[in-house]
Length: 242
Image 1 (cartoon, rainbow, N blue to C red):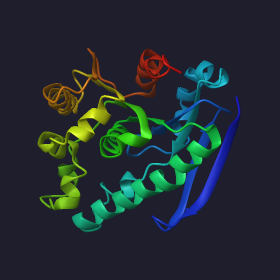
Image 2: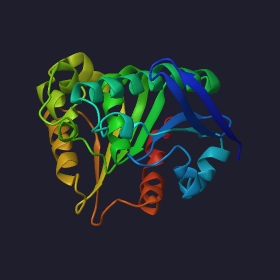
Image 3: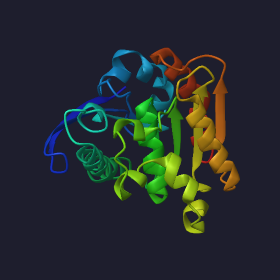
């Protein structure tokens, strides 16, 4: 299995950013880590190995970016407004540096976004905001209550990056139609701290007639072994028509 390491200076976050890539061809899967994890943890804890067959068969090419949560949403040494701004700079790094790179490398126009914990938030938020660039999203125990990180600060920028809020108010049929062109999977364990958030997102999608899968487990999804299980249970949904 081919593995490559990339490090570059991102003009968006104005610092170096790191990425591991696995595979040679296939649909790009951008896989976001948990808030305190690093870009290499999916490799080091066996998640990449668990989906080796998908990678070696050329079905997917996996892009593992670093986490930026401790410098954005969870950086309590800066003002709440700056936390939101830093998150948006991170998002621009993903959209301009990694999505473009993945499209070019694979010659695929659509991306699968996945993530674990707060990484699940990154994945879903990008797909809901930019459904044209995505094939689908797999959020594993996604943590969507970002308002808890900004201590009462809730301006327009914060609103449009809080899926629990903007999805509730969304009526634009253009977006809803494009959501239905994506495969949306929300995986959550009933004991998860974020289970009710996932349940609410699923309820909103259902009310707006957006097809999706609410993939519920009777145990917490909080370890890398859980991540392996969910990935292997669900990756095939994104590949059926490829």
